[in-house]
Amino acid sequence: MKRNGIFFWVGAVVFLIVIALITKLIGNEYPFFAGYVILQFIVLAVAWSILGGHAGYVNFGTSAFFGMGVYTAVFLFKVAGAPLLVQIAAAAAVGALMGFLLGLLTLRMQGIFFSIATIALTIVIETSITNWRYVGGAAGIQLQRPPVTWPFSGYVQMLFFVQAVLVVLAVAVSRYIQNSWIGRGLQALRDDELAAECTGVPTLKLKVLACVISGALMCAAGAPAAMYLQYADPSSAFNLNYSVSVLAMSLIGGTAHWAGPIVGAILLASTQQLLTVTISSEVNVLVLGVMLVLFVVAAPEGLIGLLRRLLRKEGK
Amino acid sequence: MTPSGTDAPLLQISGLTKRFGGFTALDNVSVDIRPGERFGLIGPNGSGKTTLINCISGAFRTEARTVLFRGEDITQLPAHVRTRRGIARSFQIPRPFKSMTVVENLMVALDFAVATDPMVSAADRHDTAMSILTGMGLASKADASATTLSQVELRKMELARAMATRPKLLISDEAMAGLSSSEVDEVLDLLMSLADHDITVIMIEHIMQAVMRFSQRVMCLEAGKIIAIGAPNEVMANQRVQEAYLGT
Image 1 (cartoon, each protein chain N blue to C red):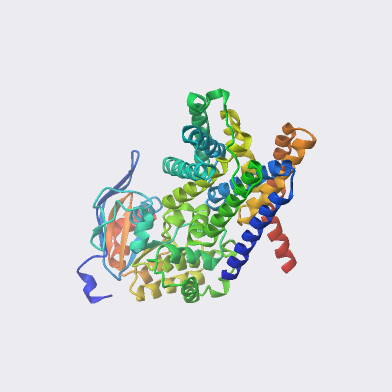
Image 2: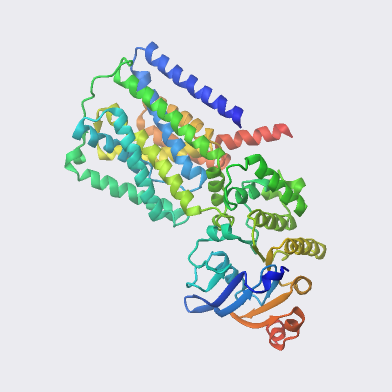
């Protein structure tokens, strides 16, 4: 376990160094635009799987958390010109609070009822933001990026790097949860909530904790999106596509291991980017749907589950 | 039995009533269980046996001061806190953590139910789990997935998981249902050996020979009411108990 930890952190540092070098070496901005989206989806999918994978509570409210992150950034930027890091930290705090309230109110409900409540949350928040003039209302709001800070050569490169740091953070948190008592408790309550409770697992507390961590990471992932697009409007910030894509990425990657959502996000997000450029952005959704159906039928435990099954067969 | 145990009851149930809508599942049930006692709970299907243990273990909430454990009112505590205080149970239909191995099932109990001592490493907890499994005769299955176990192994694993919470009171809910007669003896011997370790055991069972052999005292419920309580022979000889069971 200890050795794995060293490998993980060395890998994380190498990843960040490579990302930093890429921002220096590639002059063209487009790879960063596309790469940013992929990194953003990795954070979202990893964050989603903390509650959806470990605890088995399917959250359809990813877009609520993501959109809240976007609008926390918009609000802070408009009110005080807050720098990017402050926007992200504040978004994480807002996400944690949202996760706490949502968890406390809805996690007493089991299974599908929680999922329905999370859809409602998205609609409630989107409607509120749509009617809030100060942050642009339904028409949206234009944002002027501040000058980029050293050592970055462009704002998009900086956002790309910041999102990569968020990826490392999210994966580290998810990995920690999986390997710790929190993960064992969540896994137990996913298998059988009553049995878990009678074995000493504080099920409600753990579910709320998972919801808080997951919410904080999702909101944090949304915060840089305002500066990325230099524009925010409710119907795209709270777009249900985020919820569906992130759910599909986690399930297709597999939620049994922290690496699953990463694999799923890279696979699906790059496919989506490719399709958007080559065919159209509408085809994305179709491909997403078809892939989800294929995986649910052929590999219900996702790519990670498929890999494990193959390895086990080989072992035998 | 411990000599001091005769005075202060471990578990006191007083005036416990549980209704589901208009249906009264438990009607003014009062009983004291002494420390170290082996207590048998019998009664026809639907008489309220499982409801009673759900009220004790915390799956159902009840009115204040109806359930006292070691002299303290536990009615307002959630189930996991009751487990930590020393009440463990097995389930009528086994409820293993299916995505885990047998030893991991026990690790859940060791991680959560037992007061966490930072000095106790994960390796030590694993050793504890293994020694419990060895005691149950399940050591060879430690790394098997819980889904691959046979019925009797599942029952034993549930008891092992309950034991891993270091209970003072263990409630076994029909741990022998559906087992062959030799398997019944195996599980019964296990329960007997637990009682030797100063653990109070409440056993719900339909297999009368097992109840007779195991229990120091037996209580019979019918339609939520206690109809007989006392030494096993007396309860079996009781006419109302025989009527409840045989329907005559």
